[in-house]
Length: 458
Image (cartoon, rainbow, N blue to C red):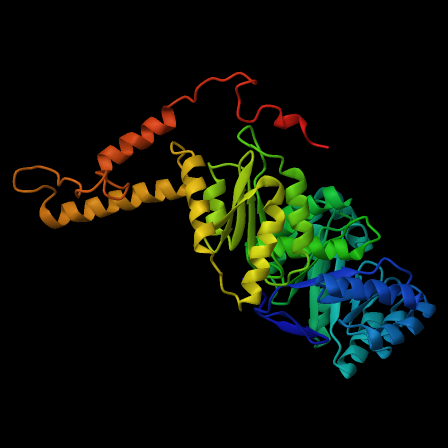
C-alpha cells in the first residue's frame, strides 16, 4: 500500500498514491555549475523526476542558487554535519533538503531547520544510513541492525512530530539487501509518511543493479515505497535512472519507452541473436511510446511471444517473420530482420498507430510460418486451444448430459480434418501427452539444422 501522506518536491508529488518517483544524485562537485547542470540535463532526459546534489561547502550553496534556477527538474540539497548549510540551502531555493539524523546535531539544531522549512513551505527528508547511525544506536547495530535502522528513523519522526512538522519523507538505506527490505517493511507499518527507497552503496553497474532490483523490487511489489534511487559506482548518473525505470517497468508501476523481450538463447536457436538484440535495444532508445518489442529465436516460445508483443521478430536459420499487433506481416532474410522490424514500427506510427498490411507479403509470411513452425511443440497457443476445447466440451456435456442419445460423439464437420478446437478433449490430451513424451530424432552435428552456428559469434 502507498504511504497515506503526500508531500510535493517542487512539482513532483511523493506518496499518497502518486506514481513512484525516480531520483538520482549528481556525481560532480556542485560548485562546478557547468558540469553539474550538464549532468542534471542528462538525467532529466533519461527520466529522472528529481535530482539530489551534495552541499558540503559554502561554495556549493552559492552554486545551488543557479542550479535550482536552471534545473529542468526539482533539486534536493544533501546536507551532513552542518545544519547551517541546511538553512542556507533552504534560502537558496532547494526544493527539498535531506538531513541525516546520525550526524546533523541535536534537536535544537533540527528545530531551527524545521522552522525555516515551515516558513518556506519546503519539505525535508530524513535520511537514515546504516553507515552513519546516531551514536546511541551503534551498539544495537551490531546485534540487531534492522531494529537499529528503524529506531533511528522512528526517533527522528517523533522529533518532527513534536515540532508539529509533517512535510517530510523518510529513507532507511543499508548495504544489506535483506536489512533494507526488513527495516522498510517494519517502518511502513508504523508511520504514514512517504518512504524513499534505496540500497546504499550497492556496487558496480552490474552487481549494484541486481542488488537494487532485488531489494527495491521486493518492497515495491509489496506496495512499499514512494520514490527510489539506485546507488551505483559510476560517474554516469543517468545509468542509475535507467536501472530505476527498468525496475518500475518490470513491475508495471510506470511506463516509459519500449519494453524489450528477448529470448535467452539455447540449443534450439537457429541464428545468432547477440548482435540483433543489441541493435534492437539501441534503436529502441529513439522511441518514447511504451510498446512491447520481442526478439525470439525458436518456435517453442518465439512464435507465441512475438504474437503477444506489439511488434516482434521470430527467426530461424535463414529467415524469420516480422509481427505487428499479433499478426505475421512480412518474411525476411535473417540479416534484414532488424531493418524490417523498424520499418514496420515506423510505418505504424506514420499511419497514426495503425498496422498497414501488404496482404501478399502477409500471405507469404503465413505460408513460411506454416512450413517452419514446429508442429509438435506445445506453444502457448496450442495449450490455450487444448484448454479452451476441453472447457467447451465440458459445457456441452453438461448441457446435453454428456452424450447423444446413442452415446456417440459427434463427428467433425465434412470438408477436412478437425481443427484443434473441434477435436474431442480426450484425443487432444492424448496428442499433447504424446507430443511431450516424443523424443526428437538424434542427429549428429553435421546433420543438425544449426550446424556451426554456435561458433559464428564475432
